[in-house]
View (cartoon, one colour):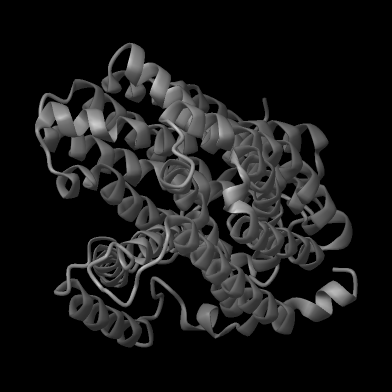
Length: 465
């Protein structure tokens, strides 16, 4: 197979970018590695109680299996994105997949909690390359009128893996041992060979990597996530100081980690705001559904998975449709359709959550479909605001906002439910009422996100893309 060679500053009219066979192979490659990356993140949720019992851990201690993974994963996403503006994608994806599998090996061989946690952190440091490179490949190697199809395929695979994760994790951990969950990650080893054969060769740019800026951003985001997810108040001033230093640094550095020109783009910046608001509600919503099914409907764990799974399958099927619609009509109309479906789903759940699990299942299908549309169309809308030389760090920052908003959303839901635990006499309500309040609040947030998106991208939608 001939592998094209090109500079990182190339034209989107290069022959390989319009080669249908090349495009189809790239989509298959991306979907394969994204599937195992997402599966790895979701299937460990059901194994957390077993891990805590084996190593005699408290809830706060064992939570770092997931919290630590999310923090490192989000930071890795933007770091790989910035590096991809300088270094070849093939090299970065190879490094990411190697680290991902080294972490899996550490986790499989772990004999104590610290080795297990180290394995998860190494996995996250490599796994963060996967969504970052997937977004970048769609942006860099595909023209705008084909980009939605790629992002739609990725969104479908994300939904499928997210739905299968708890099922696969529960089956493997229940029948064998949670350590065997790490073995599934080894399926991505084949992708190293395929990626190096398939993706075009690139020459690195003559630009240095801003290590100081990267460290400041990492400290700021880590402290912020620790404050939000664990409510450690000491982390808040650390985050504020690190953000201030990072902002000061980016205006003094010739090639900063995050360029001020990137954040100066109004459309791009507002696209990130919309992403944070929308994705935060979605992650919080999906986190709250199992709690609601247990607390309101008394459903056992196995039945909860069965209620959620049809929605994930529907999203997997309709993610492709959302991507193709984004290519045909432009990203903004599909984003509005997705926001409308989410708004409808949130309000229906608030009104009908006491009507039985079948009602919950049907409303979940509406919400999962809305999220599938949002994933592909919002990413495409944001990507079209970026110049080619900023695509890597731009989509990397988008990914970081995407995942950190999920941490914010799930943490907010937990704190919100805790407000009604009876410790504050003025805040007392039935369990169904608590969740109704939560879903109405999510709907209001979607309305704000929709208004902001319309003010920013509305003209593109009115003009058909």
